Length: 269
Image (cartoon, rainbow, N blue to C red; front, side):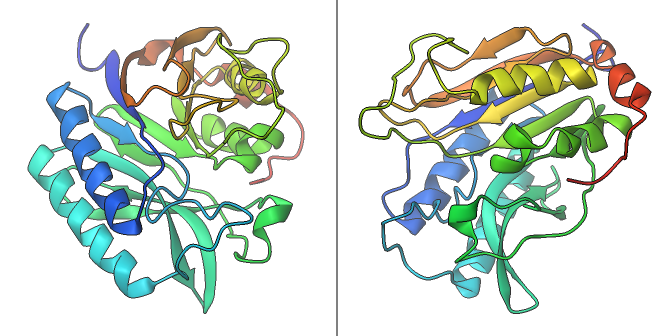
């Protein structure tokens, strides 16, 4: 495949970090592994650095100094590996904390942030919602980001990017096992929750690739996966299995045609 027609991406299906310091080290390892596999982009789960604040737990308070140092380390890792990284994190904006994804270019510069616009109700006591959306690039690939709740439940978050030329929309999230909940073994199992079906729908209704990225944990109801622009499954990581999933995208298939045909309100979600 010619470089203009294909793009290799990597989804880092990593274990939940035991400490915030471990989150940075594991992210650095994933960046290096993805680059070694020839990927132009590696994506990590929601708030992976410093770790998603699971309801009912008491992790360290958000720390801007720690995050600046962590981002500096990740910038060096991207520059050394010559790869773009989209890393789930949190950040301070106007004295309020936001869930975000930091996108770092292959030269180590920060391309920008995508903040989470639609918060889950359980997150509202910690974070403020962001505003606006943007696109990013990795070689010939143009991509957007819709974070967890907003991508699963609000179609306009993916549509916004596809209408503006994104061939891929990343959906970083963190889903963990709840006691008594169904434990899937195959992707989009009818007995499972709606979330993985939503990934397929977001791809089909917008004619773009959608890649969901989750933490690797026992009994998780979702895993990291890529849906084709026709809404079929391209690849997924076995449930609970740690590793970096490598996937080749045929960019010509991601036309965004159905997204551009939409005649409703083109909100940002």
